[in-house]
Image (cartoon, rainbow, N blue to C red; front, side, top):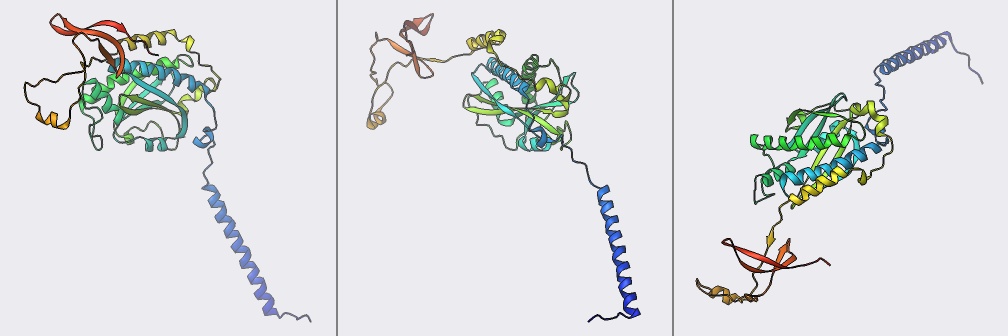
Length: 327
């Protein structure tokens, strides 16, 4: 059964409706204010760029990797092995998190491209190079944590970096010739802000193995720096080693100049523990070789030659009688 509303009830109902309309208007106004604060999404960020392919960097990094290996082997007079890791695209702040402190950071320009790039050598690689260059026999035993580079180490590394940057410049010649201009060096990544933290960068990584040590070299390039030549870097290239005879010649020359240690053991003898304890000055240990036996010359513990021992110009010498061929 329907009930007739009184005038007071009708007025109360209309009043509640007016309040609801006003509340809805206020909500719409607040929503409009929030819309004004919305930041447009930039699709050219690291996530979107990570799906873009740059075959040109495979060519550049391959040429640079060869030059890097040859240059360091020549400078340090030891065999240096290096390998290029596929490029990564990330935010600049994320790249800085990968860089340990201290590291040797070198800021450079790649004219005519606008902006700055950065080459980074981790501290382990820096100390390894310095120790080898200065003739240390305790490679890899230096304390790294919390230790900054001395002025001598910084000057030495800068000389080596300048040689490495020449390889980087030559590596770009086949894609887009650039001129490298060295700007400055830093130790702390926080002082090497070549772009804003939220900007995307392309990271080229090279893993190096020297003697028993290993290290990393990074080359960090802002995406904005390579933007004018992006179409060139996106073209497909084919790496052909036969097209680079100069590199082959330089590598062979450097390999032939690397010092090699030759060892010639005189012989061996088996002794008991008591025999060793009883040894005194003047005692004679009989070896398992005769005076006229051929001795084996070793390189890296591998037999390479056989020869007769003797004296030449007042020094002990070995006359090669047989060349051992590896099977």
